[in-house]
Length: 494
Image (tube, rainbow, N blue to C red; front, side):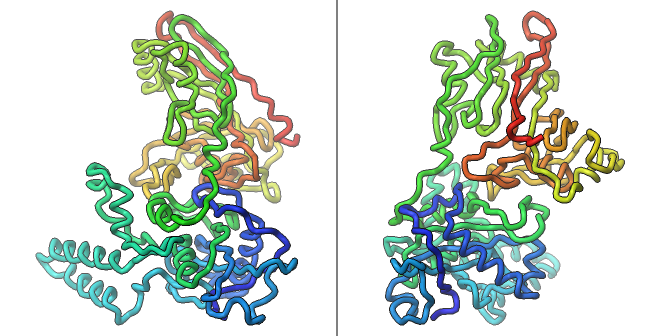
């Protein structure tokens, strides 16, 4: 049997539909396969030493066909499902290189191997590098480097489940088919096609295998650009993989995007209202404004009776709590000015993951001036987190900490219990509270239910609630304090 094809023994039945890779709960078959891969990494000193620095791995569970290098029919490939109904196998992959190589025998090979020392790509790369260090040749080196990148992408010819093949650059340009987008993304980013999911599907198609389900997990520490939790599952990146996987999954029956199923159609609760504005308590799962996955939103609901109404700010779909709505354009403009000038104060409540062993990064969290805060976990702790943020362009909507190019992001916090924390954002960056809780230089304790930066159980919501607002009424000038209580007892376990 091919060394990349591994028998999978499990009593679980395969799913009826293939995994929607950009948001999913890992199927039990994938969890079993991932366990085998994790054991393989742990048993190899070389692989483990490199993976410990942070690496994404993926598994693909397949039903092998007759062309799968003898994986079926010869009785030498394991027993498959214990109930004997069908033989199942799994493939494993890692993103990019592992310990400097892309040819480890346990894992599927790359779609195209550009790492051969005597191959065209590496030879031209060395020539261009030498040209870069030659006086007056920097622009020529840049042009040749871009041409080499175009040549490299032309070697990536990706299959789909219909047996069709297409060049990576064609897939990319057909996906981003508007002049505006093509001007912004004329070519795929470096490394496109080298993530786990494309490698796994390409190998399966090449060997006549039927993909059943897929999952990706993180091994090791978070990196400077990747805030991940060891051994937890994450979706495929959208920046590089969305165009590719949209093509490669053609011909498969794929799960519905779970984000669409989570759209909340509950009614809104009005907390405050006058002739100029209102404040509603938005439930978790409801969009604040119409988005890319649905037009159903808090703003759209209110516009049914108040056509000029407009949300003055936004809450993440998975965040519940107070949302401020202007009833007319003038009030909206005034509220926007107040938000921009930081004249509207907000308090959020979050349930964060418990400490392991009673001590986490929160105990050594630092204020903006670098002073070490109180140690220990018995008494309430408070402080200030200042970690600049920017979007991860290849993995939206994820954010990353970037001290050089990130925008200022500041959050004051106060622990009310060991797991319940009050958060007071002084800036309003995307995912600011989620990042500041999860990042090792912040609290080091992700918000419970955070699928992007922490962990999440099936059906578990993000435990983040916009609980209080303080502002001066933009028309009457009266001070206002608005609250939306949140019962967290069942989640805190305290």
